[in-house]
Image (tube, rainbow, N blue to C red; front, side, top):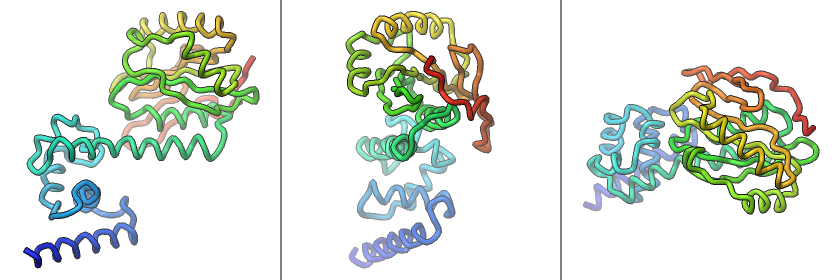
Length: 249
């Protein structure tokens, strides 16, 4: 038993050295999944489990996005380990959006599109965010207001007032996503947008736009047009008016 533990320990050390030397993006899928599993299972051989996960889900994004109830049925996984694996999505998302928002101000439409694409493009549940824009036209704050469809999301005046007062912003941008759907705004979205505009006007704050992120791109309710189209497969995207500064008027 002790010899087996030493073998596994040595294997984990070699795997860690490989990741440090080559980078996680430059090793095989099985090695990458195995490395991730090492953080979830502090001891033992996770190589067979890594094979089972890849056999079922085919790639790392699908493994991480899979429902907890489904993942925990894989031999070797349980509810806690499935939750930990799924939670890694939040870690990666938090790193990306925090780095983008905190390292520099977002002052052009292109930068804002980059930010909300990273924030919401691959989310599997619909989220509704509010972005605070200062007098210079820079996005300085982001807050998750609710999860669920716009039809069922209730935005109350006190939430708006609190956000505006906290960050002292004269304008906001609203953002929500259509998980696994098109970015074109639905009739419900457009009706909700009109109602929400009234709430912000009453609160003394300018609603610059409501943006919808789908699998195909980013849609502007203000302009009634797709502002960025996603090209599937290679991660390349095209933007319209990417260098246009935000107009607060």
